[in-house]
Image (tube, rainbow, N blue to C red; front, side):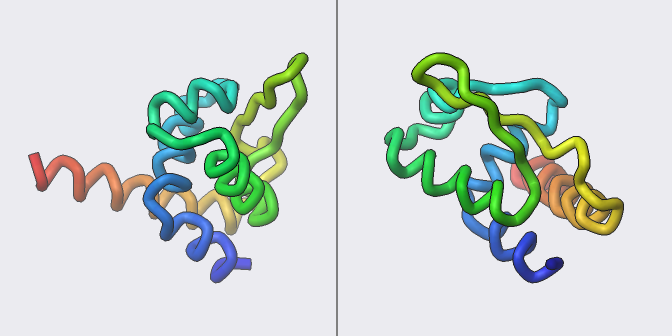
Length: 96
């Protein structure tokens, strides 16, 4: 499972989506598309990868799908996610 999680987070668009979802809220795929400048089909593929890795869950809302971090994520997966998010934030700070 750690390799699947790290592989899912290694792609910049997927990491960006996770960073958005890390605020604890639920976000529409349309918002993720706009903020990450991705097409609907591309965003859907990325979110499916994150879902398969157990990082996100979704729910249908009319024609849109809303995503949030998986509240039932195992502690080990949560620790990996936290470490990756912390590293990404540190890299962003040092680049600024």
